[in-house]
Length: 106
Image (cartoon, rainbow, N blue to C red; front, side):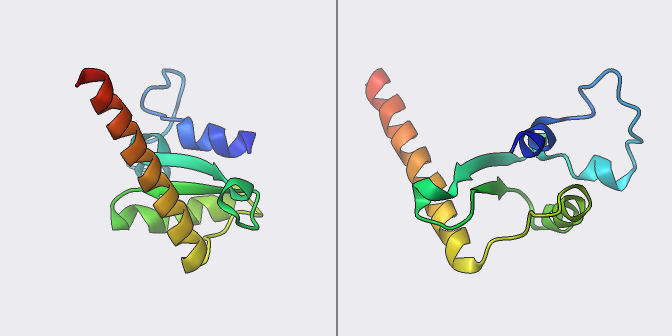
């Protein structure tokens, strides 16, 4: 989990010590510039320990899956039913947050 959080939050373009070539494949797969959320499987009634929700352009996912295959041995894409549960959960949280924010400001 900690390694995943680090990968998801890291942006080499804001790291003054980074030596990443801006034209490299890794530079095109920056999770910190996408909408990403980690959800715990138990809270969603799913078998996996945790799930990473990513909202990005379709082209981003090929590079993301390749990067995950290199960096993590146990990370894989969830099946369609589990994906749907995670997406619905994130959507519900966004709705609750927007409703709560609206009630604060009238």
